[in-house]
Image 1: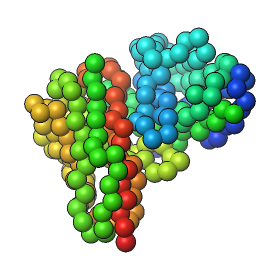
Image 2 (image 1 turned 90 degrees about the vertical axis):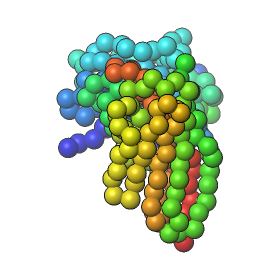
Image 3 (image 1 turned 135 degrees about the vertical axis):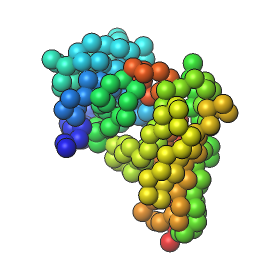
Image 4 (image 1 turned 60 degrees about the vertical axis):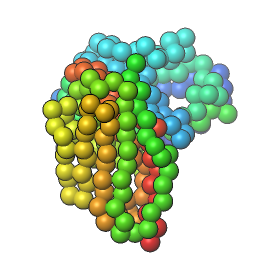
Length: 113
Length: 112
């Protein structure tokens, strides 16, 4: 069974530039999560989708971050404009339904300089 | 608001010693708790999931216990090996449909 796919693996951008991350969840998983993990900390939820609807985006900085889940499958997370403090690993995860066993992708390491 | 804490943040043990990793949470009304392993520069690998109705879950050398009333879970790794060196994270789900709330992780080093 294929796991959660993310791309790119690494990205370096200058502050104020924009960047986008892509995630393909495990087939059949209705729930998709985006987490931000700052070095040395545990992951923090940015947004949770159930199919193509948003369940929780309470911690998403909506002035600069946006996310969508096309047709309830793939998802894209965008940052525009990026700030230095956005340097982190962005993790995508999926599960059969919200709260069931979650499976994570390899993550995208973003460095903002 | 659910808060999850993992203490210590780091520990080092000699090879062969049993590992005991702690996870505490402030709200005992949970749906499940999941333990993950994270290698440097990698994503999270699911190790064990314990439903709220369960007291423990086992997989090979790993055993996780859950005590909801005290807001604690413990991950035991028997006969540690250098390959067990990684960061271990626990995450709690408050109710079906909800997000995972993570602790800060415990970084483990098993010395040969």
